[in-house]
Image 1 (cartoon, helix red, strand yellow):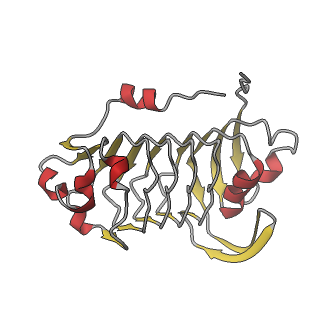
Image 2 (image 1 turned 90 degrees about the vertical axis):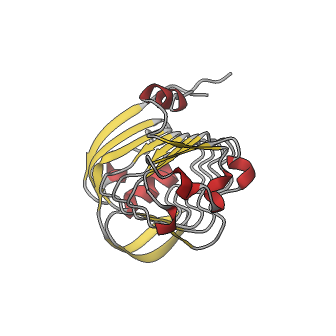
Length: 239
């Protein structure tokens, strides 16, 4: 059994400057990264491409800036015009070492395939300012166990949460799912959520006893698991 050492790094950066703060020799060793300051799409794609063993990422004290220019990722380039407070398309797709991520409170959009096939991601608490989750955003997060959706959500794309085979809990803070615009009838695979628990706001259970939401094994009015339970779900194992 090969156990990987935990290597932590704490950085304050300016937008587009993350790569310059991490030496080439360090890039394959970092498992835990905490960032504060301004970042943009260049920094997000740098983490995707250059930090192959990143397990725990905290960008909750950053602001994601707008970026207009050329992005280089996985050997290709494209011209983009990205507004602020966006996790761009496929920013963390196939980052299969990633266990946890803490997102900025100012985040508004999680774009198409942003966390697609993050097969070891365990837990996601989507910030209160997010109103859009794109197609396939969390598709293939096969070990995710706990998802929190804020009351600000009103657009969810096609297959946003399919192939989440190990989901145990989802907490949704929206009183009525009829207020959420979805682009298809497939947010989940029913067989994958049939044993999961959906927590909804007090007095709102009947609103969720229809459509896809009724595929959850049980629907409970309440805030969800305790902090202790979340910590258990969020426990990191370095293998």
